[in-house]
Each structure stands twice: as C-alpha cells, then as structure tokens.
Amino acid sequence: MVVAKIEAIDLDKPWYYTACNFCKRKMVRQGDGFEGNVQHLQHNPIYNCKTCNKDFEHAIHCGFFSYYLVVHVSDDSKGEAKFLLFNNIAEMLIRRPAFELVQEAAQENPHFLPQSLTDLIGRKLLFKITIRTYGQQEQNSAYVVDLVIYHADIIQHFDPHPHFVIFNDYESEED
Image (cartoon, rainbow, N blue to C red; front, side, top):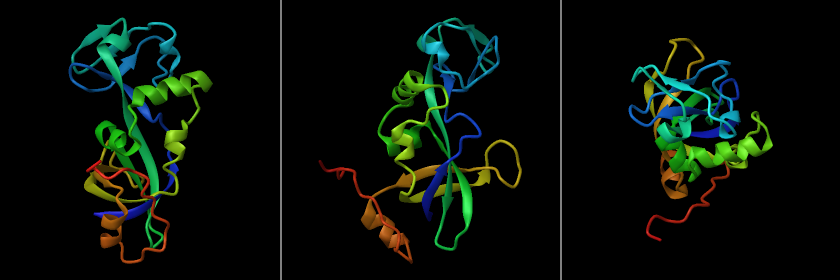
C-alpha cells in the first residue's frame, strides 16, 4: 500500500481501448491501424480480436470501451512512478464508464482529455499496487493498481506526513 498524489495523466498512449465482449482483451481496429481513434463512433470499421481470432464489423455491439489509464504519481519522499489503472479500478475511482468519456472526447477531438480525468490531478490517494510491471520489462513501466482508496480517514491512517490536501468529495458508502 502506498499513499501518493496524482501528478499527471500519461498521454503517451490512449487512456482507453476497445475491448472484446467475449474475452475482455483488446480489439485492434483494421485498416488505418490507429488504435486510439474515436472516429468509429460515427461509422463502423472492422475490429479484430486476436485472442478470439474473430473480426467484428460493429465494435459497439461486440465490444466496449475499457480504461487503460496510466497516471504519474509522487509520494512524500519525492519518489515518482507510473501506475496503471485498468477498467474496474479506474471506473470505481472516476465513477463514470469509459464509454461516456470516449463520447465526450469524440465531441471535442480525439486528443481531448475529459474533465473527469483532469480532475484526478492533485488527488492524494491510497493505492494497492502489484510489484510487477505490465507489458515491457523496462525501467519506466507502470505498476498495476489492484485497489484505490479515496476516503480521507483511511488515507490519513496510512500517511505518515499528511500535508497534502486530501479530497474526500465522495459520498460515504452507507448513503
């Protein structure tokens, strides 16, 4: 468990992907090869799921948008790291499904970062991470987040130096 503040959203890769309804793995858009494009909301390109080995003409019906959110975090020691939040964890934190944010981005432009994501910047949270990297085994790989806790009283229990502003803008789970 680590208490850390979100410093930035990593924009080197898209913050979402189109996932297969059957296996939940990433589907790849055929044709132009640009995987982070939201233009498919206006037309229906073919998507391929390599895991299921199937092509799908209408990704909206056979797939869904899933978070792949990489955030840059820092702790009190000024240590920095990248944390990767997959769909269930990101949706729990943001409280909106990825599809809604993708639609929001499509109305602006494909490189638009929705307000719900920029609102995460500056938040101090308690993260449970996996001490393994996802994807390539390189120095700047992201640690996978297993759990995020945003309740101020729990964060303060784990935080030896509570000098950051802790946001507790969520309703209690009893409500």
